[in-house]
Image (cartoon, rainbow, N blue to C red):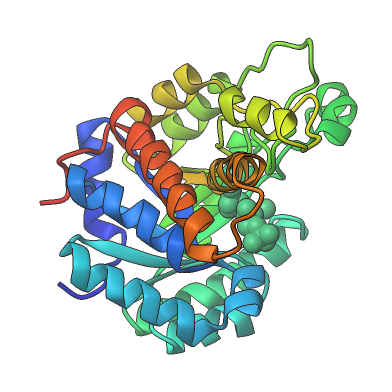
Length: 312
Ligand SMILES: O=C(CO)COP(=O)(O)O
Ligand SMILES: O=C[C@H](O)COP(=O)(O)O
Ligand SMILES: [Zn+2]
Ligand SMILES: [Zn+2]
């Protein structure tokens, strides 16, 4: 099976009340850990590549790693550009074989976001590629005061119909209180996504696939291990898994996870080095790191996203 777009995946996920995991990939072990879990569980998969990943690993290497995963797993896999910040970057990924791109012009004024997204959609659709766009800016710890004071960073539901109809985008990332990275909520506060905003969006866009960025749950077992074996990540907090489960059952069809991969890998490697100070063969510590990614992703697929056995 060649690389696929998200069109069929999202239709099935929307109707089936589950979500597809979109995992960021940067090297071979990450690709292998994710795809081995998905293969065993027959889960559809989105592998996504950021601008930074492309700068780190090179487009061709990532492309060929993902093509290898398609051959090895036989799964429907979508290769997606995460947070494309320009038409040129999106075009380069479309021309280079990606089946989905995100144009993230959410920091631009509404009219400009529409204009650039529309341009990407026209080019992408001409080439059989689908487009994710974004409205609203993801909350960060530093934004919290501003968000609660003015409610300005969450997606404004009254904008979504005009945005989707004018741009022709295929899915929409919205801001309902998630954020990127390992420090999503202030310690001592209760993490709570704005499901009321999501509900308002869904009312206005029935049947339309919604995307959640910043959806790592920051498992405390990894944070504790990192801190125990020489790391320093105090107060790292993610999105509670029960809220991700609730999102996955709704119109949210794509849930983005990157930080949890990084945490699984780093915790495992720190522990390995602490316990095997004399080892220096990268295969020795990358093997358990890859296995930790596999186990974490399997847990997400079965217990959070609900997309196991939905590939075919
Ligand atoms: O949204 C993401 C990638 O686009 C990843 O979010 P996390 O940092 O929560 O893993
Ligand atoms: O949304 C951000 C993703 O986690 C990708 O991060 P990155 O730009 O460091 O590759
Ligand atoms: Zn954004
Ligand atoms: Zn993101």
